Amino acid sequence: MNSIPTQQLKHEDENVFFAFRTMEENHLLHANSKPLPHRHDFYTILLVKNACGSHYIDYVEHKMKPELVFFVSPGQVHQVVVNNNNPSGDILMFSDEFLNRNYISNEFITNLGMFSCNVGTPPLEVPSDSFQKLVSISLAIKEAFINDNNFKFDSIAAHLKLFLIECNKFAIKSQDENPQTLQSGRPIINKFRKLLNENFKIWHKVNEYSNEMNISPDYLNNIIKTSIGKTAKEMIFQRIILEAKRLGLYTHLSTKEVAYQLGYDDPSHFSKFFKKETKQSFTEFKAQLETNG
Image 1 (cartoon, rainbow, N blue to C red):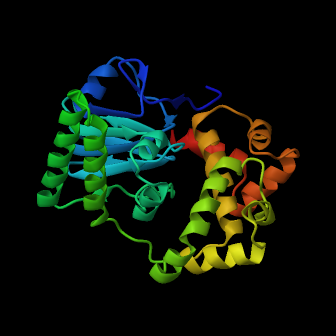
Image 2 (cartoon, rainbow, N blue to C red):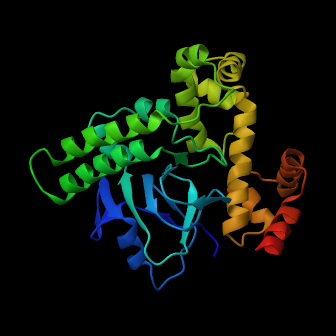
Image 3 (cartoon, rainbow, N blue to C red):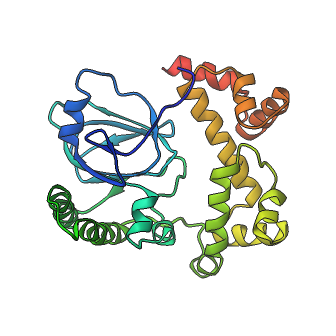
């Protein structure tokens, strides 16, 4: 395997902007095949009612158990391994286009903080009474999805917002985040994160992002550092390292090939960068994966 496959959002082999599926249906669909790591080009919410196994997100294992909610962002690599034969739960999948068409702003999704893309972000644990409320909202989404009417997607979008708002009550906010500065600097942070995800393979310097945003590198660094406790440079480096580890874990690419994919013309420069940031060489990282795997 030389690349991580990206799945598009489909329902009955048709490209769609929203889809609903149960964990039972998904388990039967893949009953005769081994689940493989993959990316989505859409958002995924996994509402676990009853399941035993593991959900790997960006090479971090999260044990599955009842009353958990997982959030997977576009581009994140994940793999669901179910150990029991009768898992139950709901899977909500939606694209940016669905959000745009139904007037749900990207800022709303970002401000909730649940689709954070942070490595090791745990699933949401929800108390039983509130979890049942989520199950009820999800059921309303399912009913709207399978019944065609003029306001089908309006209903789905309204219930999806209610679902996310309910989840937000139990989201753990980062201790590094300062609410006041985060609110004032949020538009800049959102734009930087968007540019970062689109350009991290070719833009490795802070000034490349600040120039695109028409602000100074110092101002960009100050806003991000004050808001979330990290500099823009640290976020750029973390994103590159994350992608390198994804490629190391889920492909058989050589160090040189990974370096080229991440925009390094000189593989030795990438190797030095990786070792400085992780305290081990990329070869050692790969060897560790093989030993543990």
